[in-house]
Amino acid sequence: MTDQQPAIDTTTLDTLVDQLGRAAEQLRSGDLSTDAAATLVEDCAALANQASAELERMTRAAAIEPAPGQDTLL
Image (cartoon, rainbow, N blue to C red; front, side):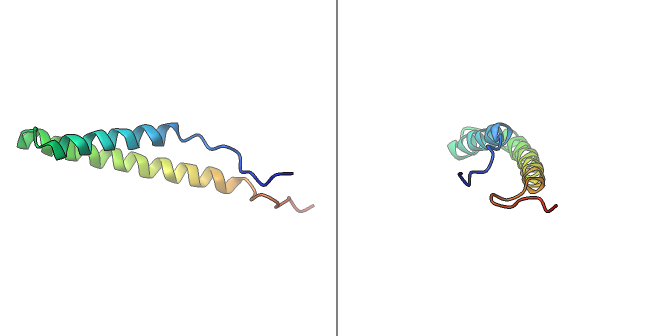
């Protein structure tokens, strides 16, 4: 018997992290106009908010399942 948690689907979170990483690269490049950089920063804030909501959703989903080795009481 193994003590492995069921796999959690992190596809949405991974996508958001990738998008934030690409945005950070664009901002660091210095190739954006001031207006474009400001818009991208606003987009990053929205992406971070989405990532936070996804983490919250994942946390709630994980809390529903009992920890490994914990059985339901009769």
